[in-house]
Length: 121
Image (tube, rainbow, N blue to C red; front, side, top):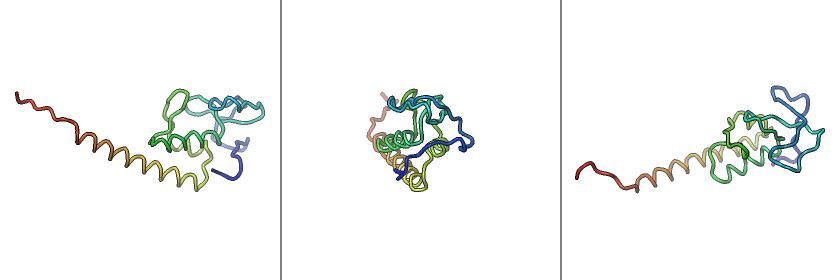
């Protein structure tokens, strides 16, 4: 987590910014705060998006999904709109890799123990 609060400014290019309430935090509704519109259409700020994605990583997920509509966000979008620091990018990418490998190994272990069906009677 960063030392200073992450915020959008009018200088942020390539991001659709609005002054609407945060869709992920009902208490974040100050009208003068700029928030980003995600590809799924929901609205949030960089700090909330970072926390949302960190929670998903901590739960072992390998993709980032909107907590409202379940649409998957591309990692490039998360990286940009969450305003990830270099340390956060490194941490996220390491955790994504770890989760991917763990899920792959868990899948292989489970599928190894599934009963085989024979066509012979």
